[in-house]
Length: 365
Image 1 (cartoon, rainbow, N blue to C red):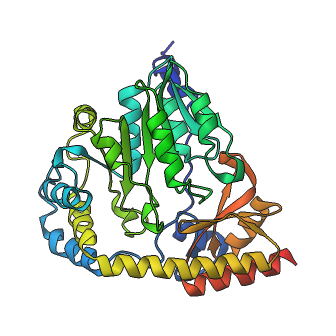
Image 2: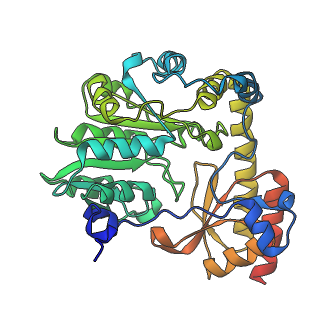
């Protein structure tokens, strides 16, 4: 009898949940007989403005060099970010999206018998990377859709290695107060690393700054992405920053050439296009206000969002999701997060936001 793969595989793989992304626009269009150009994807928190023209130009200029391996050290992007955040170049780790950086920190510090504290409505990847390495996720309730930092602190044990926090949080959109986050970070015992996810920080007026605490030697890794406000999700580039010793450990397990050539060029160019960044943020604020007001007028509860999406409480969210998808509007149901009566809706263009509200009004009737 042949040995089955399941008898050979590492045990955590057998119970590992699978992240399920939404369907491609083309599949949605084909399934419901729609024009792909008329399908609005409002499910993945992508920028309604797309990428910076400077980033597009950088991709075009670099395209003829894709036969070459990328700079495995991300030298020029590292230098640009070093100046931007006033950190040393050796304090940055780069990944194929910030998801890879989250996986690296989990791989380095989680193992059977250890624990990671997460918010019950925190980004699902925190739970996935914890389980993958045989560790135990410890979910903490999130009243009012934000982290209960006191409860998270109370959950710390000798087994705790990582605490994952995103502010603003995905998928709820609600930020934590900067002073409360700093107080929390200062209170952590020395055997715990705070993994602070800043994927949506560019949308916030008073985003918390943990770089001073990192300089003081606090065990903190902050992560950022070019997939959201910078509009480069298709290129998959994210990064983390923290103490140089911590980053050096993560670089030991990072795959070589994990960030591609076009992503490096586009991301560096995007960082220099501050005018486009301001335009993207302003457009998002306008669209978010319009969408939130419209949803309120339909009698729906909307969580106070500081991101490029809104969390909506609604009856029969899966049914509404399916009905909207048939109409060429793709949103996100949140059952995997335990949010059984909610949809997450990305802020789209003005036309997409109007379509969403009009179709949702018909469905609610």
